[in-house]
Structure formats: C-alpha cells, structure tokens
Length: 250
Image (tube, rainbow, N blue to C red; front, side):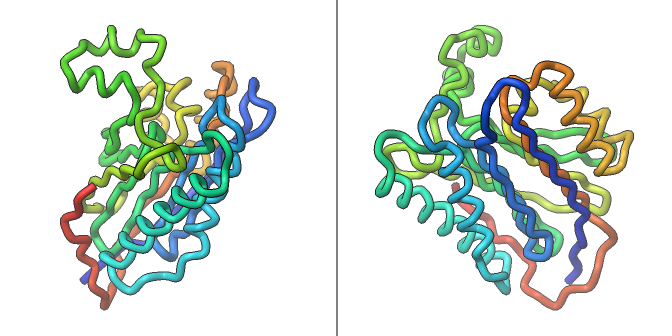
C-alpha cells in the first residue's frame, strides 16, 4: 500500500471586531488529523467549547488503522459534546470540522458551518455542507437567494455541546498527489468567496496562500475570528498498514 506525507500551514486571527478569539485548531500531520473548531458567537464560553474539542483530539494516541482513526476521533468529539452538556450552564457550543487522512484515503467529519475544501489541479471543490437554517431551507426547495436572505439563515442546526444528541456528518474520498485541503471557520468564508480562494490556492505556496487569505479577510473588515489550515499531499511513500477507510455513515 502507499500513502502520502503532508505539508501544513496554519493561521488564526481574532479579526477586527471581536475582543477574543473563540476559534481553536489542531494539526497532527503525523497522525493524519487536522481540526478547526469555532466557538458559537453570542453564547457564553464558546472558546471553552472549541478548546475542549481540540484538546481532546490532541490527547489521542496514533491509531494503527484507518477504521481506528475514524472511531477514536468520532468518540473524542462525542465525549466533548457530552462533557459540555454536563458541565456548562446555558448553551456552550462550537462547530467542528476534521480532516482525517490514512494511506490514499481521506474522510471529513463535521458539525456546523466550518468547512473543508479540496483544490485538485487548480479546481476548488467544497467537500462539506453547512449545517444551518439556510441550507435546510434549500434542501426543502427554497431558492438560494431567498434562503440566504433570511434573518435566521446562519443559525446553526448542528454543533458540539448544544442540547440533544450530536449529529456528525461524514464524507470521504481518495487523495491524489498535489491535492490541497483547506479547513476554515466561517470567519474566512464570510469575507472571501470561493473564486478568490481557488485563485489563491492555485497561484502560491501554502505559507503565502495562508498569509494572503488572512490579509484579505482583514482588508474586508474581518467581522469574525478567522482560522484556516492548509494541507497539501506530498509525493507517495510506502506504508505497510491497513490504509482503507471503510464506507462510513454519518
């Protein structure tokens, strides 16, 4: 079997409006795990929620198989969800988006409106879907313009720590050499459109791209915290491991 090494660039910024950064992030390329969590704005202790998720994942041991990687990540997020519900008064929650890579396969695991994109041969593709009221309205047949103009459009329908069971969504696919994945909080996508992001990833190296995207959000007002992780698959390397991520259900 074969797999990939990964280059990673990470940036986070409080933005120009918020007083504190409620985003949190984690990059463990040796484990094949990258995470962005965004504390829910307008609720107390959003930073605590996002930090609990990333610290729980940072403490995980490196698994031996792709199946174990998925299970340990999912279980850690679910434990964080339960702890937030048990130990916090009121609502304390965050979005989470995680990229898992093992061998030649990847999986996206998420709840909320933080996103994962993949750039392949210069073409950008959104791999996740936002868990908010606007997307629910669109799924029920409302046109996009009407849905996104609703005053409640950005209200989350899934998140870690909110009342009720945690609903994680999962998607997966194969990795090719040169693929670049972008994980980000909505502080980035609230200011930058997909075309701008596509051009940036296609024309610069990871560090330059990361800097350019943060600078662009600041130029546009940076109304929210912004966090991004860029992950680029390098040349294949030999692996003697079970590298097949099985078909997974969300």
